[in-house]
Length: 481
Image (tube, rainbow, N blue to C red; front, side, top):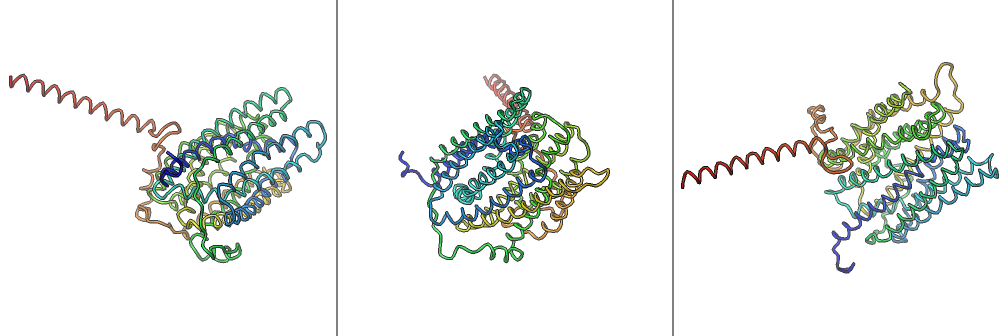
């Protein structure tokens, strides 16, 4: 069958499958490269203020480039925009490799961390340029019926691949560290990241993406978006997410610094702890997909928003690696997976197709400013604040947790669900507890262990009932004879 003979539904189905394959390669890049940005900066002797700058500058310049990316949608095909930015992002990893080689040879030993920040910001800008176009086209190839479950499935698969890649990368880094070759270990990982992103580029070229037709007057300025934000539902949602990102980014970059510098853990333990939240996210994503499809994205935000407040506070209670995995990281996997999924799907529900690219760009800019402020304040706080008998990072974590709670408490009641869902929390919020269970599907299949056992027991009962019926029929036939 020729490409032109395919229906839109068939093309969308093909693109959704290709998107998973393309994302698989991207997940490898994220696992072996993106997960080790801060560890590599620490290996280059980056200070706390520089660690804060990595997140703050990337958080600011990434969304700025998204605004330019949203305007590209007006002039160029979305497929061309995304494919070219993927190719450029794959190429940027080569510059990381060159920087590492120059550092080893002593050419840039003093300025290595600063140069790394500069290259990383360009890497983020290049990747962010294609963000609005990608978000827009994925909205076109999914619909209200399959979107929540598709993205939960997609995120589950990609999360699993990223997790496995990250752990294998940690084993490799610990091995190279034992030979005093850890910088070379990073460079091999970055080479794999580059190749993986080129594979993403290969798969993306086969996507079926329709042209988008934009009506005159669809565009509006960022200032107009900000001015109207406090007065409309989506604007209140955007403000809430931005406030939460301030709180997230205040503490987020320093969990890695705490584990590597504060506790002195090796790369393997560091990776196991950091990646454990991703593992738990994979377990809970199918549940949140089903939950959001039935009860709405706002309800997921309400549950998970408050739960995120516990995460940084739990980090201060014990330095034991096992505790860190099964308490704060377990809560993080449960809460952040639902928070990210519902916030993304809320945009698809609330924004029209034509305005999706520009709204995503402005939404990203909102969050970029928030991340810049949060990470900047966190970096300055971690570098310069010293209180006797008080761990500075712990105090930063506690402040982050308190802010997450306050932002959720004041902002969530102002946000309304876009569509009609089954919501019964006004009558009895405890009724949701029966829905919060990871039995909608494990990472390796649709059926969870619990539901599999139930299904198996039902089949056994049916077989017994059928055998009894057949025996009774045989007896009845003999009596008749």
